[in-house]
Amino acid sequence: MTNNLQINKVWNFENSYSHLPQKLFTAQNPESVKNPKLVILNKPLAEDLGLDINYLESNLGLTVLAGNSIPEGAYPLAQAYAGHQYGYFTMLGDGRAILIGEHITPKGERYDIQLKGSGRTPYSRGGDGKAALGPMLREYIISEAMYKLGILTTRSLAVVTTGESIFREKMLPGAVLTRIASSHIRVGTFQYISHYGTIEDLRLLADYTILRHYPEFISEDEKYLLLLKGVVNRQAKLIAKWQLVGFIHGVMNTDNMLISGETIDYGPCAFMDTYNPNTVFSSIDRYGRYSYKNQPEIAAWNLARFAESILPLLHDDQEKALKIANEAISDFEKIYYKHWLKGMRKKLGLFGEEPEDEILVVELLNIMEKYKADFTNTFKQLTLEKYTNTEMFSSLEFENWSAKWQSRLENQDKSIDESKNLMKKNNPAVIPINHRVEEALSAAVEGNDYCKLDRLLDILSNPYEYSSEQDEYSQLPPPSKIPYRTFCGT
Image 1 (cartoon, rainbow, N blue to C red):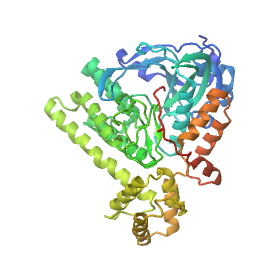
Image 2 (cartoon, rainbow, N blue to C red):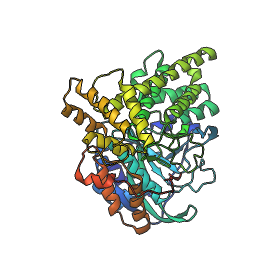
Image 3 (cartoon, one colour):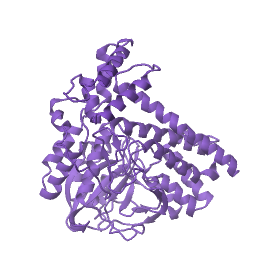
């Protein structure tokens, strides 16, 4: 490890998390790697963070992104947390990630700087703590696509190859991803301290979380109830946005739900192609626990686990605490549904609220499911009113539905042009379509060719643009009898 004072000219670290009870983390340096190489850098994000791009691209910057150097003022640590994985509670923690520190931007914003794939920690549970290049590039692609779609998410600053090979059924090139988050405090963080800490430890974590993410509540008498309600509200809004673009997370364990309301961990995730509420992409989700249709229900289940963790802070009387928690959690469904229906109205160009809107939306989704229509492209074609000659668009069901939709559009006090503009702002012309993602990853990992990856990222950088260049990247692959599957590994 080197510790060069020049590094401190770029980074502006604080380490507030390290002031929490020590059982929440272990001080830990990342492992050095043999031959690091910067393969992708998120320059717009670097500029937003106030980081010098020339420095990040230099050998000095590379040593930090690879984990070979620790900036002055940083306090590297691995966070401890627990979680329900597929419904079963277990002790977890950062098994291959190191939080370098909290970077304060020139605007005063605080972001975690985390190295993912940076070696073993006390929470590795027998793993090697490393990461393969493909999954790290995948997280980079999907997280940046989510950001451009307007969905709260952790982001990716850089991917560095390590010059080492790691074994994942076969030998693969190793890599380290630099992940940026407003924090990495999870539902599982609260579950961990609830099980292994004291009430005072729990209170310290809750107060810290409120100050960091919900500062408007810190002086309120019922600040812990307001924290719970705040998390419920943010998660309801987040999951609604997932559903509106057909995003399937794939592994909604409680350790993968951030208190900040950002999306985290892009392992077995993908965007739905053929509309089917039962769609599952994860290779290990054999019973559909985390299917598209179940995501709202699972989010509510996870939030109930969060509420259980903070019961002692809600009221001294456990029965009263349970009642308070249940009332707060019960709000999730209506908040989620409000955001989802509002978003669906926008996707159909509808202003205001009419009683028949819900039926109009449900009927369209039922038609899409019956005729196996592509989720993203269907809404794109409705926006452009350019229908391909498919079975769905020529069906009597769609003809009847379209007549009702047109009547609803014509009876509102907005012009058709205004409706179309609303649709364009809410129906992406392009998403990270699965075969394009795999194509880019294959070229990068197997051929060391990043041209397809760079091109894909450029196309995804403005998903609501509706440019002719995007058309090629919204075309579906040839039909396959083999369902698309994604795997854990990030």
